[in-house]
Image (cartoon, rainbow, N blue to C red; front, top):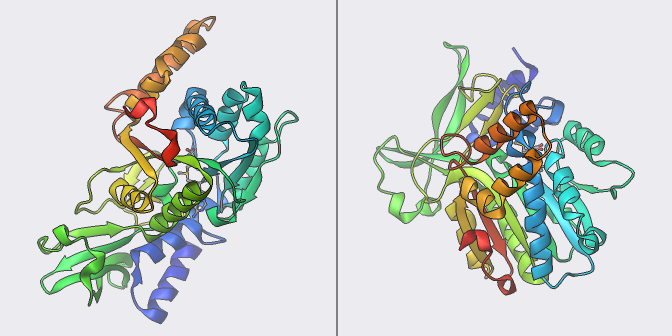
Length: 362
Ligand SMILES: C[S@@+](CC[C@H](N)C(=O)[O-])C[C@H]1O[C@@H](n2cnc3c(N)ncnc32)[C@H](O)[C@@H]1O
């Protein structure tokens, strides 16, 4: 039995069943045993692979997006280039290499990496600290990023934030909780406290049948509020890339991934990546409510193709050998094809009102 499972069992025996968000928080971010705190989970040899790890083209196109946004902002002399949850730092490295071709942009950027995992910060340092690159600033939360205009990127960040789940029962909506089953010797889902006030369930979903699950990510809501307020005050844009739903709805999307296979999120806390679908409708509502523009979400395949992924792939294939050409073609397909990452992943931007409609969203 893992140490983390013992910690979770003790918390349940001391205080009763715990909320799904508390379980996720412990499984992913417990300072000693949390999944992201202790290891490098990325790549073919890890548990999952993300778009920047598939191909340098992904980060390069985001670098071009960032440079175009900066020009649209009137090319401010200083701009915070922020990434939330940078993983191995690969996206940021590819992004600044491509965007750095624009010398004035390169001079203007101050890089902020928002990362809670000490193990991943070390890997990011190795990826990003080279003599020709300026020192990034590491931050524990978005609120610690310096004030000022910003361009922000978040790829597969929001899906890693802890969600709350609510379950409809015959007598109304309850918090969905996690309990310990002595007989099974395993964690199990349980009905938690009944909601006295059902305002946290959207009104059009409240009459869902018994057994229905509604998910809400309060942490994502708070972060998107802080980003939108910053953009409104200082100008800039944020690009959010993740898998999730465009309309709010009913459904249990909590899932665990280990060695590229899915399995029960309760079976081995701290040993697998746990994620949930991002509620893009919620993020868009919060941002629009604060008076900033929202574009998309559009499918990742359409976004990358409109930014010129095909042309970039053609360019890289010039002078490449047969094996490299096959690799570039496979990466291109993986990023854009509908049966791979092309439609499951979506891209949404938030931007200050002066910036206009980005070409990829038209
Ligand atoms: C699925 S990984 C995505 C990594 C990277 N963006 C990529 O595309 O390869 C999630 C990242 O978010 C970080 N993370 C998770 N929760 C966080 C939080 N609350 N604040 C900051 N970083 C967090 C993890 O440590 C990890 O770097």
